[in-house]
Length: 350
Image 1 (tube, rainbow, N blue to C red):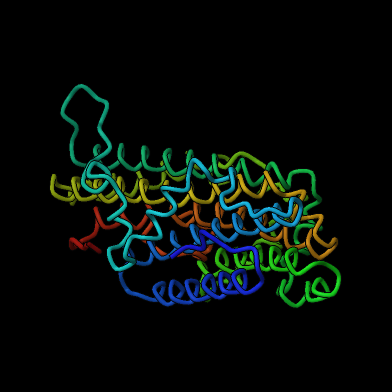
Image 2 (cartoon, rainbow, N blue to C red):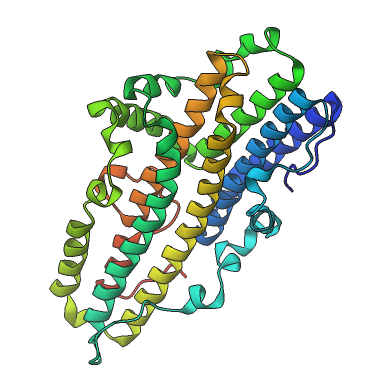
């Protein structure tokens, strides 16, 4: 369950922190399952729980300012119901349980008037899926990247160079317990976003530092369709289909269309949650940074960098973009789905 109602006293707040940690541990365990549908929901629930951590930090800071407990924060008011639904869904049901019927079994529709051939259906569905993934990723990235656009890339890279917990220990002696706990909730959010990457977390840190140091973080700040090379991706996947067009019959084309539709819909869920997290960060960023600079500034920029990195790397992995290096690798991406449609022997993960 999510941390929704935190009392104003230290025991209640500490209990909420422990609850957040227990949920995190349970979901990390679920990421180890062989079922990609379950892994995807576990990752989505970690993201949603991170949003509630940030929401709790916001409410604690508001309580510190006003002396009155803010039970609900406006920053996620519009998204709260969807977030609670995500966390209430049994992880074993998989992310498909959150998709509407058309997303579970629907297909990208071919626009041509004539009846398309099975290979043409696969190519059209692939291009449409790529466009949808890039559009959803770009929307989420725009929110996170706006908040860090003015910060030099090298400075941002330093925020994720090492474990944040050790770097902010001096905060406990410098601020009130309420502010300290608020910062701890921010760190819990950071941990949850990092946990999605599992054993690849160390590689993620290296990759993000590399990107941030390259041309002052240009990868974070440029258009994602250019970064991913979406036109080249479409051409590459289309060529794979053309090379083995004789293997693509109606059954395979239908399976490919359905898998791509589910992939795009599921990734859209992930990006919607990350976008909500980013909105909270942008709305309360000045409060977080002011808790106890420079430690709190480091924590704030770290969560933004990791959220941005998650968006870029995750979107890339979903597309099977080579520069993402398979760091997320929770589900089969577009390329893997296309490959199944043209494989010498039919394969499925469903």
